[in-house]
Image 1 (cartoon, rainbow, N blue to C red):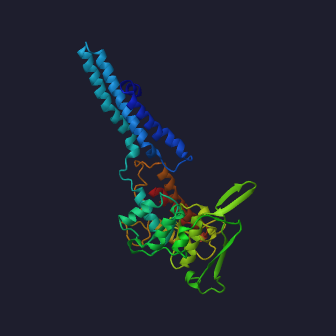
Image 2: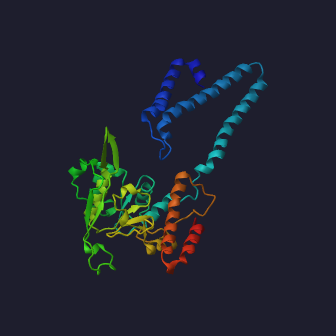
Image 3: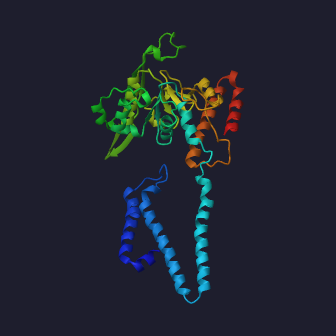
Length: 386
Protein backbone atom coordinates (compact mmCIF):
# COMPACT_ATOMS: atom_id res chain seq x y z
CA UNK A 1 0.00 0.00 0.00
CA UNK A 2 2.82 2.44 0.81
CA UNK A 3 4.68 1.74 -2.46
CA UNK A 4 1.46 2.00 -4.48
CA UNK A 5 0.63 5.31 -2.80
CA UNK A 6 4.05 6.79 -3.62
CA UNK A 7 3.81 5.48 -7.17
CA UNK A 8 0.44 7.15 -7.79
CA UNK A 9 0.90 10.42 -5.87
CA UNK A 10 4.20 10.83 -4.08
CA UNK A 11 3.36 14.28 -2.68
CA UNK A 12 0.21 13.08 -0.87
CA UNK A 13 2.01 9.88 0.15
CA UNK A 14 4.77 11.98 1.71
CA UNK A 15 2.15 13.89 3.73
CA UNK A 16 0.72 10.57 4.93
CA UNK A 17 4.20 9.32 5.86
CA UNK A 18 4.91 12.47 7.89
CA UNK A 19 1.54 12.07 9.65
CA UNK A 20 2.33 8.43 10.40
CA UNK A 21 5.73 9.24 11.86
CA UNK A 22 4.59 12.27 13.88
CA UNK A 23 1.48 10.62 15.37
CA UNK A 24 3.22 7.27 15.89
CA UNK A 25 6.98 6.98 16.29
CA UNK A 26 7.68 10.60 17.27
CA UNK A 27 4.77 10.67 19.73
CA UNK A 28 6.03 7.46 21.38
CA UNK A 29 9.54 8.88 21.71
CA UNK A 30 8.27 12.23 22.99
CA UNK A 31 6.05 10.67 25.68
CA UNK A 32 8.78 8.25 26.80
CA UNK A 33 6.22 6.32 28.87
CA UNK A 34 7.52 4.31 31.79
CA UNK A 35 7.22 0.53 31.68
CA UNK A 36 4.93 -1.01 32.74
CA UNK A 37 1.84 1.12 32.17
CA UNK A 38 -1.35 0.48 34.18
CA UNK A 39 -3.35 -0.06 30.99
CA UNK A 40 -3.10 -0.13 27.18
CA UNK A 41 -2.03 3.22 25.72
CA UNK A 42 -2.85 2.54 22.06
CA UNK A 43 -5.37 5.42 22.00
CA UNK A 44 -2.45 7.86 21.85
CA UNK A 45 -1.57 6.57 18.39
CA UNK A 46 -4.99 6.52 16.70
CA UNK A 47 -3.84 8.99 14.04
CA UNK A 48 -0.99 6.68 13.01
CA UNK A 49 -3.38 3.72 13.03
CA UNK A 50 -5.71 5.55 10.62
CA UNK A 51 -2.87 6.20 8.17
CA UNK A 52 -1.76 2.57 8.48
CA UNK A 53 -5.34 1.39 7.80
CA UNK A 54 -5.58 3.57 4.69
CA UNK A 55 -2.34 2.11 3.38
CA UNK A 56 -3.84 -1.34 3.84
CA UNK A 57 -6.75 -0.17 1.69
CA UNK A 58 -4.38 1.20 -0.93
CA UNK A 59 -2.62 -2.18 -0.90
CA UNK A 60 -5.89 -3.91 -1.75
CA UNK A 61 -6.43 -1.46 -4.61
CA UNK A 62 -2.87 -2.20 -5.81
CA UNK A 63 -3.62 -5.94 -5.87
CA UNK A 64 -6.85 -5.37 -7.78
CA UNK A 65 -5.05 -3.18 -10.33
CA UNK A 66 -2.36 -5.82 -10.80
CA UNK A 67 -4.92 -8.58 -11.28
CA UNK A 68 -6.77 -6.41 -13.77
CA UNK A 69 -3.55 -5.99 -15.77
CA UNK A 70 -2.93 -9.74 -15.78
CA UNK A 71 -6.50 -10.58 -16.72
CA UNK A 72 -7.23 -8.15 -19.52
CA UNK A 73 -7.30 -10.99 -22.02
CA UNK A 74 -8.71 -13.63 -19.66
CA UNK A 75 -12.13 -12.80 -18.16
CA UNK A 76 -12.53 -16.11 -16.23
CA UNK A 77 -9.29 -15.36 -14.37
CA UNK A 78 -10.67 -11.93 -13.50
CA UNK A 79 -13.82 -13.49 -12.04
CA UNK A 80 -11.79 -15.93 -9.95
CA UNK A 81 -9.60 -13.11 -8.69
CA UNK A 82 -12.65 -11.03 -7.75
CA UNK A 83 -14.11 -14.02 -5.88
CA UNK A 84 -10.85 -14.52 -3.97
CA UNK A 85 -10.80 -10.86 -2.94
CA UNK A 86 -14.45 -10.94 -1.79
CA UNK A 87 -13.84 -14.10 0.25
CA UNK A 88 -10.72 -12.57 1.80
CA UNK A 89 -12.60 -9.39 2.73
CA UNK A 90 -15.31 -11.45 4.42
CA UNK A 91 -12.88 -13.86 6.08
CA UNK A 92 -10.75 -11.11 7.67
CA UNK A 93 -13.42 -9.66 10.01
CA UNK A 94 -14.78 -13.15 10.74
CA UNK A 95 -11.32 -14.28 11.78
CA UNK A 96 -10.88 -11.16 13.93
CA UNK A 97 -14.19 -11.87 15.67
CA UNK A 98 -13.23 -15.51 16.21
CA UNK A 99 -9.91 -14.57 17.76
CA UNK A 100 -11.03 -11.62 19.89
CA UNK A 101 -14.73 -11.96 20.74
CA UNK A 102 -14.10 -14.04 23.86
CA UNK A 103 -11.70 -11.43 25.26
CA UNK A 104 -13.96 -8.49 24.46
CA UNK A 105 -17.29 -10.07 25.43
CA UNK A 106 -18.74 -8.46 28.56
CA UNK A 107 -21.86 -10.63 28.79
CA UNK A 108 -22.73 -11.35 32.44
CA UNK A 109 -19.59 -9.53 33.57
CA UNK A 110 -20.73 -7.46 36.55
CA UNK A 111 -17.31 -7.19 38.16
CA UNK A 112 -16.83 -3.37 38.04
CA UNK A 113 -20.32 -2.72 39.47
CA UNK A 114 -19.97 -5.36 42.17
CA UNK A 115 -16.47 -4.23 43.13
CA UNK A 116 -17.62 -0.64 43.61
CA UNK A 117 -20.76 -1.73 45.46
CA UNK A 118 -18.79 -3.92 47.85
CA UNK A 119 -16.35 -1.13 48.66
CA UNK A 120 -19.15 1.32 49.41
CA UNK A 121 -21.14 -1.18 51.48
CA UNK A 122 -18.10 -1.87 53.65
CA UNK A 123 -18.40 1.67 55.03
CA UNK A 124 -20.68 3.23 57.62
CA UNK A 125 -22.89 6.24 56.90
CA UNK A 126 -21.24 9.51 55.83
CA UNK A 127 -17.87 7.80 55.55
CA UNK A 128 -14.74 9.20 53.91
CA UNK A 129 -12.82 6.65 51.81
CA UNK A 130 -9.27 7.14 50.55
CA UNK A 131 -8.83 5.28 47.25
CA UNK A 132 -5.73 4.55 45.23
CA UNK A 133 -6.30 5.15 41.51
CA UNK A 134 -8.68 4.61 38.60
CA UNK A 135 -9.94 1.07 39.15
CA UNK A 136 -11.11 1.58 42.73
CA UNK A 137 -12.52 5.07 42.08
CA UNK A 138 -14.28 5.46 38.72
CA UNK A 139 -16.67 2.49 39.25
CA UNK A 140 -17.62 3.99 42.63
CA UNK A 141 -18.35 7.38 41.10
CA UNK A 142 -20.40 5.63 38.42
CA UNK A 143 -22.69 3.67 40.74
CA UNK A 144 -23.12 6.71 42.98
CA UNK A 145 -24.12 8.95 40.06
CA UNK A 146 -26.03 6.48 37.88
CA UNK A 147 -27.48 3.94 40.32
CA UNK A 148 -27.78 6.13 43.42
CA UNK A 149 -25.77 3.73 45.60
CA UNK A 150 -24.34 5.15 48.86
CA UNK A 151 -24.35 8.78 47.81
CA UNK A 152 -23.59 9.72 51.42
CA UNK A 153 -20.00 8.45 51.06
CA UNK A 154 -17.21 10.81 49.98
CA UNK A 155 -14.37 9.31 47.96
CA UNK A 156 -10.91 10.90 48.15
CA UNK A 157 -8.75 9.73 45.26
CA UNK A 158 -5.13 9.94 46.36
CA UNK A 159 -3.81 10.18 42.80
CA UNK A 160 -5.95 13.27 42.17
CA UNK A 161 -5.20 14.48 45.69
CA UNK A 162 -2.07 16.16 44.35
CA UNK A 163 -4.06 18.69 42.30
CA UNK A 164 -5.53 21.90 43.78
CA UNK A 165 -8.70 21.85 41.64
CA UNK A 166 -9.66 18.41 42.97
CA UNK A 167 -8.90 19.27 46.61
CA UNK A 168 -11.05 22.40 46.27
CA UNK A 169 -13.91 20.25 44.97
CA UNK A 170 -13.61 17.93 47.96
CA UNK A 171 -13.67 20.84 50.38
CA UNK A 172 -16.37 23.01 48.84
CA UNK A 173 -18.80 20.74 46.97
CA UNK A 174 -21.67 18.61 48.30
CA UNK A 175 -22.49 16.04 45.58
CA UNK A 176 -25.94 14.46 45.99
CA UNK A 177 -26.34 16.43 49.24
CA UNK A 178 -23.46 14.62 50.95
CA UNK A 179 -21.26 16.28 53.56
CA UNK A 180 -18.14 18.12 52.37
CA UNK A 181 -14.74 16.64 53.15
CA UNK A 182 -13.42 18.41 56.28
CA UNK A 183 -10.16 20.35 55.99
CA UNK A 184 -8.34 23.09 57.85
CA UNK A 185 -6.67 24.33 54.66
CA UNK A 186 -8.03 27.59 53.25
CA UNK A 187 -8.68 27.82 49.51
CA UNK A 188 -5.60 30.01 49.16
CA UNK A 189 -3.44 27.44 50.97
CA UNK A 190 -4.81 24.65 48.77
CA UNK A 191 -3.82 26.54 45.63
CA UNK A 192 -0.25 26.75 46.99
CA UNK A 193 0.04 23.14 48.20
CA UNK A 194 3.13 21.30 47.01
CA UNK A 195 5.56 18.63 48.28
CA UNK A 196 7.36 19.65 51.47
CA UNK A 197 10.83 18.64 52.67
CA UNK A 198 10.39 16.22 55.55
CA UNK A 199 12.79 14.54 58.00
CA UNK A 200 12.80 10.77 58.49
CA UNK A 201 11.55 10.66 62.07
CA UNK A 202 9.09 13.53 62.32
CA UNK A 203 6.46 12.79 64.98
CA UNK A 204 2.88 13.88 64.29
CA UNK A 205 -0.06 13.96 66.69
CA UNK A 206 -3.84 13.56 66.49
CA UNK A 207 -6.14 14.57 69.34
CA UNK A 208 -8.71 11.99 70.44
CA UNK A 209 -11.98 13.03 72.10
CA UNK A 210 -13.40 10.39 74.44
CA UNK A 211 -16.41 9.97 72.14
CA UNK A 212 -14.08 8.61 69.43
CA UNK A 213 -13.57 5.37 71.34
CA UNK A 214 -16.02 2.46 70.99
CA UNK A 215 -18.73 2.33 73.67
CA UNK A 216 -17.09 -0.76 75.16
CA UNK A 217 -13.89 1.22 75.84
CA UNK A 218 -15.24 4.59 77.01
CA UNK A 219 -15.55 3.53 80.65
CA UNK A 220 -11.92 2.41 80.80
CA UNK A 221 -9.46 4.45 82.84
CA UNK A 222 -6.45 6.18 81.35
CA UNK A 223 -7.59 6.37 77.75
CA UNK A 224 -5.08 8.55 75.87
CA UNK A 225 -6.38 11.85 74.53
CA UNK A 226 -3.80 11.90 71.75
CA UNK A 227 -1.97 9.49 69.49
CA UNK A 228 1.54 10.15 68.25
CA UNK A 229 3.09 8.50 65.22
CA UNK A 230 6.01 8.91 62.86
CA UNK A 231 4.92 10.23 59.46
CA UNK A 232 7.64 9.01 57.08
CA UNK A 233 8.74 10.84 53.92
CA UNK A 234 7.41 9.38 50.67
CA UNK A 235 9.86 11.09 48.30
CA UNK A 236 13.58 10.36 48.34
CA UNK A 237 15.96 11.97 45.85
CA UNK A 238 19.71 12.45 45.76
CA UNK A 239 21.19 15.87 45.09
CA UNK A 240 24.93 15.49 44.85
CA UNK A 241 26.05 13.82 48.07
CA UNK A 242 22.88 14.79 49.91
CA UNK A 243 19.64 12.82 50.05
CA UNK A 244 16.52 14.98 50.03
CA UNK A 245 13.40 13.57 51.70
CA UNK A 246 9.91 15.01 51.34
CA UNK A 247 6.21 14.24 51.60
CA UNK A 248 3.79 14.52 48.70
CA UNK A 249 0.84 16.86 48.52
CA UNK A 250 -1.60 14.01 49.04
CA UNK A 251 0.22 12.98 52.25
CA UNK A 252 -0.43 16.45 53.65
CA UNK A 253 -4.04 16.19 52.47
CA UNK A 254 -4.62 12.85 54.24
CA UNK A 255 -3.24 14.19 57.52
CA UNK A 256 -5.26 17.40 57.30
CA UNK A 257 -8.53 15.58 56.57
CA UNK A 258 -8.02 13.19 59.49
CA UNK A 259 -7.13 16.06 61.83
CA UNK A 260 -10.03 18.27 60.71
CA UNK A 261 -12.51 15.40 60.94
CA UNK A 262 -11.67 14.97 64.65
CA UNK A 263 -13.10 11.40 64.62
CA UNK A 264 -16.63 12.65 63.88
CA UNK A 265 -17.10 10.61 60.67
CA UNK A 266 -15.66 7.17 59.90
CA UNK A 267 -12.51 7.27 57.77
CA UNK A 268 -11.30 4.32 55.69
CA UNK A 269 -8.50 3.36 53.33
CA UNK A 270 -9.37 1.05 50.44
CA UNK A 271 -7.51 -2.27 50.53
CA UNK A 272 -5.95 -1.27 47.21
CA UNK A 273 -4.16 1.69 48.82
CA UNK A 274 -0.46 0.99 49.32
CA UNK A 275 1.26 1.22 52.70
CA UNK A 276 3.17 4.39 51.85
CA UNK A 277 -0.15 6.27 51.69
CA UNK A 278 -1.07 5.43 55.30
CA UNK A 279 1.15 8.34 56.52
CA UNK A 280 2.47 6.11 59.34
CA UNK A 281 -0.94 5.10 60.72
CA UNK A 282 -0.59 1.42 59.79
CA UNK A 283 -1.01 0.26 63.40
CA UNK A 284 -4.33 2.12 63.71
CA UNK A 285 -6.15 0.36 60.87
CA UNK A 286 -8.75 -2.40 61.21
CA UNK A 287 -9.94 -4.41 58.20
CA UNK A 288 -13.69 -4.14 57.64
CA UNK A 289 -14.83 -5.70 54.37
CA UNK A 290 -13.00 -4.13 51.44
CA UNK A 291 -11.71 -1.28 53.59
CA UNK A 292 -9.38 -0.54 56.47
CA UNK A 293 -10.92 1.66 59.11
CA UNK A 294 -8.93 4.22 61.06
CA UNK A 295 -9.35 3.75 64.83
CA UNK A 296 -7.98 5.83 67.76
CA UNK A 297 -5.98 2.97 69.32
CA UNK A 298 -3.27 0.57 68.21
CA UNK A 299 -5.12 -2.38 66.75
CA UNK A 300 -2.54 -4.52 64.97
CA UNK A 301 -1.10 -7.69 66.46
CA UNK A 302 1.79 -9.99 65.58
CA UNK A 303 0.22 -10.74 62.17
CA UNK A 304 0.55 -7.09 61.17
CA UNK A 305 -3.14 -6.25 60.81
CA UNK A 306 -6.39 -6.26 62.78
CA UNK A 307 -9.81 -7.56 61.74
CA UNK A 308 -13.37 -6.69 62.70
CA UNK A 309 -14.76 -10.23 62.58
CA UNK A 310 -18.36 -9.09 62.94
CA UNK A 311 -18.29 -6.72 59.97
CA UNK A 312 -16.21 -9.14 57.89
CA UNK A 313 -18.64 -12.01 58.44
CA UNK A 314 -21.65 -9.84 57.64
CA UNK A 315 -19.96 -8.65 54.45
CA UNK A 316 -19.04 -12.14 53.24
CA UNK A 317 -21.96 -14.26 54.43
CA UNK A 318 -25.01 -11.94 54.32
CA UNK A 319 -25.74 -12.17 50.60
CA UNK A 320 -28.15 -9.36 49.57
CA UNK A 321 -31.11 -10.25 47.36
CA UNK A 322 -30.75 -6.90 45.55
CA UNK A 323 -28.45 -3.85 45.66
CA UNK A 324 -29.23 -1.46 48.52
CA UNK A 325 -28.80 2.31 48.08
CA UNK A 326 -28.28 2.86 51.83
CA UNK A 327 -25.77 1.29 54.26
CA UNK A 328 -26.20 -2.49 54.23
CA UNK A 329 -23.46 -5.06 54.79
CA UNK A 330 -23.23 -7.90 52.28
CA UNK A 331 -21.03 -8.45 49.22
CA UNK A 332 -22.39 -9.11 45.73
CA UNK A 333 -20.02 -11.54 43.96
CA UNK A 334 -22.21 -12.29 40.96
CA UNK A 335 -20.44 -14.18 38.18
CA UNK A 336 -17.21 -15.01 40.00
CA UNK A 337 -18.22 -18.68 40.17
CA UNK A 338 -18.81 -18.87 36.39
CA UNK A 339 -15.75 -20.23 34.58
CA UNK A 340 -17.14 -19.20 31.17
CA UNK A 341 -16.85 -15.47 31.93
CA UNK A 342 -13.57 -13.94 30.81
CA UNK A 343 -11.78 -11.62 33.23
CA UNK A 344 -8.72 -9.76 31.98
CA UNK A 345 -5.44 -9.47 33.85
CA UNK A 346 -6.46 -6.34 35.76
CA UNK A 347 -9.77 -7.85 36.86
CA UNK A 348 -8.08 -11.08 37.93
CA UNK A 349 -5.61 -9.11 40.01
CA UNK A 350 -8.43 -7.20 41.70
CA UNK A 351 -10.41 -10.41 42.27
CA UNK A 352 -7.54 -11.55 44.49
CA UNK A 353 -8.59 -8.75 46.86
CA UNK A 354 -11.76 -10.74 47.55
CA UNK A 355 -9.69 -13.82 48.37
CA UNK A 356 -7.58 -11.65 50.66
CA UNK A 357 -10.72 -10.59 52.54
CA UNK A 358 -11.88 -14.20 52.99
CA UNK A 359 -8.42 -15.27 54.13
CA UNK A 360 -8.17 -12.38 56.60
CA UNK A 361 -11.45 -13.45 58.19
CA UNK A 362 -10.22 -17.05 58.36
CA UNK A 363 -7.03 -15.81 60.02
CA UNK A 364 -9.10 -13.76 62.46
CA UNK A 365 -11.06 -16.85 63.46
CA UNK A 366 -7.85 -18.86 63.81
CA UNK A 367 -6.61 -16.54 66.57
CA UNK A 368 -9.33 -17.65 68.99
CA UNK A 369 -9.73 -21.33 69.95
CA UNK A 370 -13.48 -20.86 70.31
CA UNK A 371 -13.78 -19.95 66.61
CA UNK A 372 -11.35 -22.50 65.12
CA UNK A 373 -14.29 -24.38 63.62
CA UNK A 374 -15.23 -21.32 61.52
CA UNK A 375 -11.97 -21.34 59.55
CA UNK A 376 -12.99 -24.16 57.13
CA UNK A 377 -16.46 -22.60 56.86
CA UNK A 378 -14.91 -19.37 55.55
CA UNK A 379 -12.58 -21.20 53.14
CA UNK A 380 -15.45 -23.33 51.78
CA UNK A 381 -17.59 -20.22 51.28
CA UNK A 382 -14.74 -18.60 49.33
CA UNK A 383 -14.35 -21.64 47.06
CA UNK A 384 -18.11 -21.83 46.51
CA UNK A 385 -18.60 -18.18 45.57
CA UNK A 386 -15.39 -17.77 43.55
